[in-house]
Image (cartoon, rainbow, N blue to C red; front, top):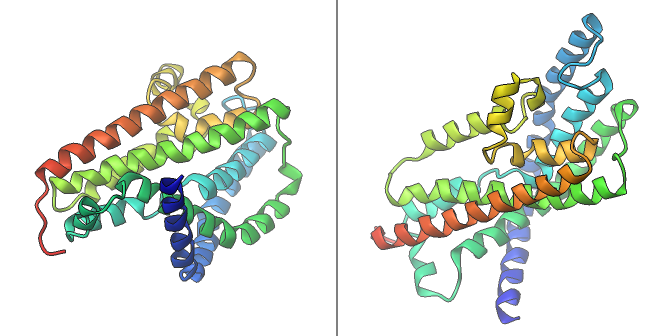
Length: 269
């Protein structure tokens, strides 16, 4: 109970710190709509010239797919946590966590959710306006069970993204600059998770191959559950797959920390 209280305090401090940058969050949200509007305009033109479904998505569904991408990103995206973790290691700030009864992973998780809460509080109004503008494309959840599964999947998505980013940041124990690796991971994840387009638009062999990786679980799965593209028993299997990938990413994060601390030598800090 005392341990939980400790990380609740970290969460509260994180909220306060993040709210000092609320203008940055607001502008980031507004500018993020620019590429989204461009993508929606592109697909409107595609379906205007070729009205039949593409990748199993109708014109209404493809527009709503990108609306859900924006919503899921607001709740789950890892923005600067990996950079901050790498900076803690590089600048020697990590030393204090080796001397105090604080688990650095849980400390960072608390800050991650604090950052998401602060970001949501700033993004909810422009996001609501955006959804209102495209309300004619809105699609209700396939059913109540799909919506509940979507919420669970959303949590798994957030944790999976965080643990993978955390593990990537741990490379700072061995490398002075890890930005290249972070950008490579982000570029691959942007395509392989379904940010750019629904994965069913890929050739079938490539689609099935990607489903054996953690990337679809980082976006495509929760959206597909909500929209009924994944239904019935497949929902259970999809959530189980997400849970397994999340546990594997957690184990990797713990492993990287343990090996990194053994190698670590502080420079200042």
